[in-house]
Image 1 (cartoon, rainbow, N blue to C red):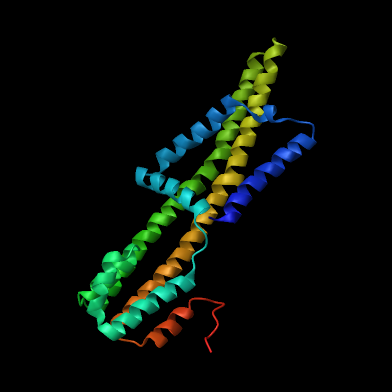
Image 2: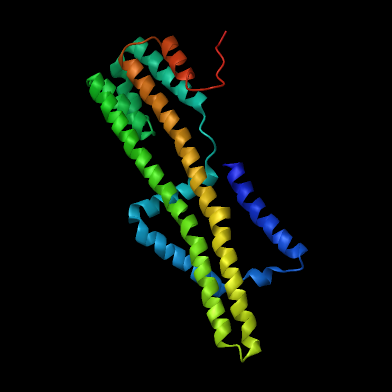
Length: 252
């Protein structure tokens, strides 16, 4: 679970609502179903038009990961690669075939299978780098969906504001209807700007950050797999992988 993601979104919304109440307002003033339909419905339609279905589905999956997964533990990657390196050193590379069947990470599974099958090192490297490249495109696509949501929603909020003002202008002769139109106008703007700056853009940023961490871990796996295939010693492999960790300390 990522505490910063959960705390950040609730803290931001809480402070804004607290400021609203300190100014003498109340929650009911911000609860406008009409404004919500205009802003979130309009923004959702623009996003759906902009991206293929697979990118939209992936963005929803990444939403769950943003809140439910913590930072990548590079030390765990190194430990796993060291286990494979020591086993290959003692029992031979072909012994990794059984480990590949039980491996849950798709890139690592693919690499271990290729190495155990005796594939050419250049082919293994190209295959793993191609897989990583496609994964990067997928993650970036999910981030762009949220980034676009953050770009569209303030503009759709302005549309909601204009529609509310049109309603006001049409009912100038009936003061009882002016309040509802003005409320929709201003609340739609709040929804649009708030959704962009409190949710969508931060979500995009967090997805990119987590993707970057994940890619570093994948690069470590590729480095380890190629080193194991080359027959390098586990000690040398560990030193290579520790280079990916800025605060790594050499073992005495």
